[in-house]
Amino acid sequence: MTELAERIKWSEDGLVPAIVQDAQSKEVLMLAYMNKESLQLSVESGVTWFWSRSRNELWNKGATSGHTQQIRSLSYDCDADTLLVRVDQKGPACHTGSYSCFFNEIEVAGAEAGNTPTSDDRFAILGELESVIAKRYAERPEGAYTTYLFEKGLDKILKKVGEEATEAIIAAKNNDNDELRSEASDLLFHLLVLLRERGLPLDDVMAELQGRHGKPATNNAMRREQAGK
Image (tube, rainbow, N blue to C red; front, side, top):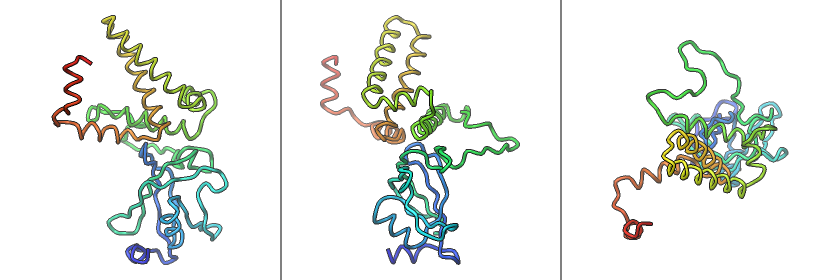
């Protein structure tokens, strides 16, 4: 910790800004400040501790609200004057009850509204949907279908994934591509809900696919394929 503290460029009042990011959805949740003591507590406990400039005291995120932040990784930038804390966020990160503190949009000339996918990234909607599901998971808005799924729990989510997979199979067997498109969309949505419930980032799934790409099939996989399974 002494060596780490020496690397960080602390401000005149002994603080460094800490950007907190959801490790799953990659959404930026909040900005807070750490001093040497709160950084040490964060490293040693595995949950976020900050320094309150208004109260002039240490504070453990979620200690009173229960909206804790389990640290997945902690790094500092090239200038060593800003920290990036990737966390598993339990509940909303913002004291207002919002998933992220950054919910006040500012219109910028030439900027696209929201996170609308462009032709340069045809899978951007998956990242956007993952963020929306993460927001629903944290905020649990009344009446939202995703809230209903999370409140019912894992078994309900698994049931829906199974149902949508079955309906996609039936649509394909019926040679109905319009229906298949609809059911495949439902399946992908519920699969993303399942990943959020289990705390598994979509990035990890993509990395798994990337790792498999170009590799020869394993003996077991080849045997299953030859058996027609």
